[in-house]
Length: 105
Image 1 (cartoon, rainbow, N blue to C red):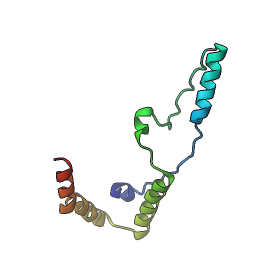
Image 2: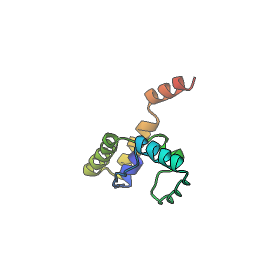
Image 3: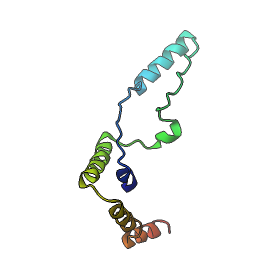
Image 4: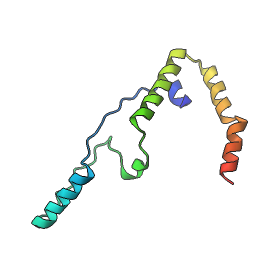
């Protein structure tokens, strides 16, 4: 997150509409009863999420939290040296090390 803030990353989110589970079931049922072939799947757009990447998608609230953190970092006008200190604090925090150590045992 600190690297994204340091690079002044700005991103936009777009809501996409996907057919509901009920719509998918009904469409499949109609095709099966009519004996029609299923329609070809549309090609994935470059910004589409691939199934393997879709294991976890952040909620709108989580995205807003990330955007808020990035905006706060930009507003603080943190220097490169300060970012280095912050990253070192996160990487070499003894509490994080204990947590990771015990979780991997």
